[in-house]
Picture: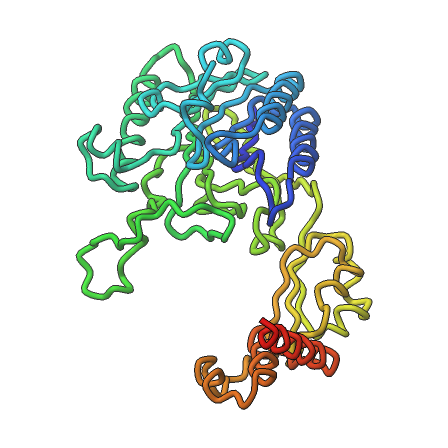
Length: 404
């Protein structure tokens, strides 16, 4: 049996004001091709299916088309809700979709009800879907501390109890345990593309040394999942291995410039004889790629070293001492997809001799005040032409004031 672990599709997301739907369509087409070519039995989608609770119509349409394509390629789907999703909206029609091979787990009360999968050669797996759990609500309802770790421990306890009962069935045969969960695992590498689900406090481990404190209340220790055969995590956008049996697939596309060097894809999980026998990486280089560039403006405009970035979404930092004139306009002539522009002088920003309030008080003339303002705001002195224009504007204003 082969399972495909994916997560964090964030369908409907924009990137610095630019829509990503076509890039998402391209990479999901690659995912479907993997299902078809590798004979995948089930796709495990661990939350953040949409980018927001109320997704736009074209995002809903793309999900519908993708699920239909996965089913047509021969794989079942197990899908949970993440912190970006509306569990109620995503779970609508779940009972009907179950019959078609698309299994939704968006209700915490159903997390111990597995989807029982059987492979082509008789391999069996119990797949448990844990939706994103809001600890403030479920802690009280389940009678545990209202923090991520105790709530997740209770969820896994319920799963273990169901799994143990199923494995005692003498007629059942070997049964692999697969769990989907959407959370921040302690030790995971996050990026700016993820919404914070942490609670901003440290766990009280009884340690005198603050450095001995492990994680935060928003992070869940990987040890919570000990003994399970495979845990398919969602939430963090970088593909990473937390333990041999606990992994993040990462998002199929980069959703922040902090992810620009990450290889995007998923994991193929091989199940045989009731065990996970292998996990292999699969890459999907879909959509427009990213580039993060830095250097003097002249070098960024002229050097062949940056040819590879010309067709990418670009974050560019110019390191000239002064902010170059029309730098963004000139850079876009070479890199038409610049989305983020920054000026950070290589030698660091010079400390201002005076605060703006002091400069305002000490300005010898209105013209000195206005040219000083230009210099202060854009970190480049006004040119002779700009100074003449400001002087003419001030003179016209004085004439108008006298005539009034």
